[in-house]
Length: 294
Image (tube, rainbow, N blue to C red; front, top):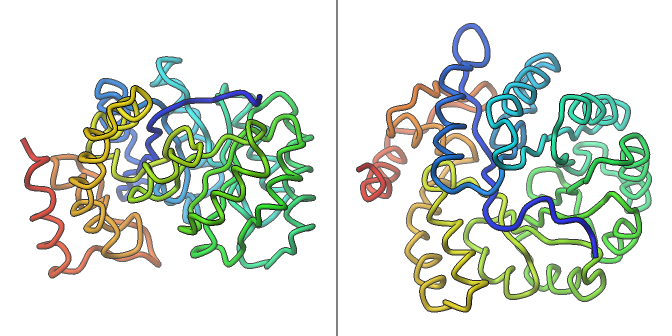
């Protein structure tokens, strides 16, 4: 059985920017909110954190800052992926050295690696940080590359590759990964609207955008599922769909940054090439956010 970095709801945390770079005072407020309101882990500098438009120094500062603020209260997992294997290795070594509890590595984008290329990419990174637990991240809608179940099986044979964040949206694929890999690869849902279906296939949690807004809701939903309170867990999943839809009405993290601003944070706007949310979608988001703005 592979090491479990966390079980439950990990927040794929957004990054606030201002004219000087990362707004660390606002970032600290959201980190504290997450810890105090039931998040089971923090995932920093992932897709939602806009790592692809951050400089290497900004990524390093943000990862280090999150680890220092959280201070061991819950696990902090650093997004260290890149379409350049050498760059991913360098960032993974940095995250390990500053105390990350694990690293999240997205499939290399743009290169269109073969399945064998994916195996070699992940193997090289894993060998560079042999004592660091790794979550591989499959999100073909953004990267153009899918990690096939048979590839997951090969990756699961690498000792420190412990989990996959599965965001293909293909539940049949998730089922096959679970069937092939069993306890040698933990599965996290990468889609907020598919948490319970993936738990039912053997998943152990979610890496969530929704939980930027309400971490306790999803953390409790997963606890209820594992406690056998399926009716309550199902009701939570279904009641969350309106806000989940609104949080993905434009490409993530455009809506979630707007949602955090509605909550009173100063998260600014996304970096180009992403643009602020449209006025029509802002109305949709405001309507969905209303029950969460207490």
